[in-house]
Image 1 (tube, rainbow, N blue to C red):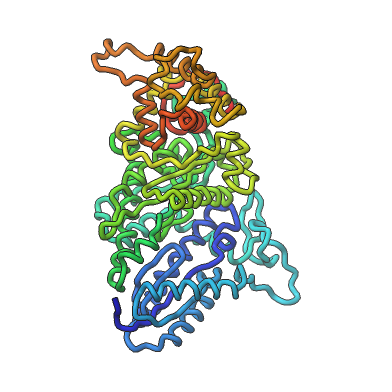
Image 2 (tube, rainbow, N blue to C red; image 1 turned 180 degrees about the vertical axis):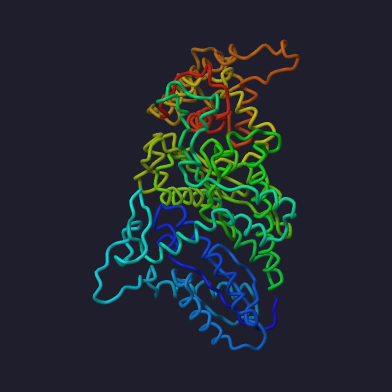
Length: 574
C-alpha cells in the first residue's frame, strides 16, 4: 500500500548499559533513565513546528518531519541541540533521517542507519577536563574523570569527588524520587484526577535498605535466623518486563503515521493504568481481595513510604524493584492487567525476568540478569512457536551471582541432567483467584513438609540416570501423580516412592473438612492447580520433577505470609 512520500527522523540513545548502569547508586540510575526518556519528549517542545511525534519509548523517538521544512537542516539542528543541552549532552545519541512512501520501510532504513551511526561513536560522552589540572577517577563509577575542585557526594558514608555527569544524574534522580510516578501518569492523560490526588499523598522508600527491611512489628519472625530476623529480611526482587514481538505486530498492523501514534498511545495508556493500579495496591495493602504483605515502610518523621523503586520505564520495557516478599505478587499483578492488552485484535504479551537477591547485591548486575532471563524467555518462545505471557526467575541466596557464560550452563551446573527439561513458567491468569490460595495451602503449616520437599529436590538434582529419565519413570510412561497410591510400591522408582511418602504425610496434616463445614482441597488438587497455572505437565514424572524444583526454589517467595509456627527448619536448596 503506497502513501505520499514523507521524511522521518529517529533519535536513539545508544550504549545505555555504559551510560545508565555504570553505577549501582539508585538515584543516578533513576535520573539517567528519566533524562534519556525525557529527551524524546523535549524534542517536541524544542522543535514544535518541525517534528510530529509518532512513537516515544524509553530510549527511542520516532518523528515525522512536518510540512516543507528542510529535513537535513532539522536533523543537524537536532544533533546540535542534543550535544549542547546540559542533560542530553551526558549521553550518546544516534540520529537518522530517511525519505519513504511507507512507514515500515522508513523504520527499517532508520534502524539500520542508527546501528551504523552507533558504531561510529564513542561508547560514552567524554568528560570535560581542563589542561594542566590533575584529575582523578570518579568516586562512584571508577571510570569517569572528575576535577578535584568539582562536585562531591557521600559514597559509602564518605564524601568523594564525582564526575559532573554523575552529579547531574544524581541530582535529577533525587528530585524524581517523589514525582516520577505522577509525571508518568499525567503524561498518559487517562488516570482520573481523584486517583492522581490519592497517589500524590505518598512518598517512596529512600533506599534499598529501607525498601527491603522486614517490618519489626510483623509476627512472622524466624527464631532460626540471627536476632529472630525473617529469612527475607533485606532481600529484594528485581523485575524486568519486555514486550514480545511488538515489532512484528507493528509490521502487520501499522501502515500509516496515524496507526503508529495509536499504537504508541495504547502502550502509554496501558502502562499508566498498570502503574496506577500497582500504586493503589501498595497503598491499600491488597489486590483483588488478596492481601499484600508489608507494602509500606515503617513511619518516620516524614511519614510512611511505599516499597517501590523504578530503574527503567518507557516504551515496551520496564524494570521495577520491590521487597522479595512482594516480587511474585507484583509480577503476577502486571500479567493480570496485561492479559487483556491488545492492538487491533493482536495480543500484546510480555516476557518477564525476576531475580530474588540480597539488597547489597550490585543492582546494575541484577538488572542485567533479569533482562537476560526475559531475553531467554523470548528466544524459547520463538524457538517453540509459543505465544503468550511467560516468565523466568533466579534465586540468589547470597550476594554472589552466576559466573557461568549462559543461564543454561548455570542451570546445568545446579540441577544436572534434569536441567534440559526446564522451561519458562507461564504467567498464571488465576494467581489472584485460585493459584495464590493453593500455594498458601501447599506451603503452609498444614501443607507440604518443607524437609521432605527439599530432600526430594536434592534427590532430583543429585541423581545420575542409568538411562533416559530412569530415575523418575519406574516404567514406560511413568505414573501420574494421582495414581501413585494405586501402584505397587515395589514397582515405583525411588523418586516416586519419595513423592508418595510426601503426599501421604501431607494428607495426614490436613485439617478435617467436616469441622469447617466446607471441603478442603486435597494436596493433589492444589498441586494440579499450581501446575496448570504455570503450564507444568504432571503426568510424566520426568516433567513433574520440575514442579518440585520450582517449589523448592520459590518456597520463601510464593507465599511469604504463611504461618511458619510449625514449619520445619530451613534447608538449603539443591
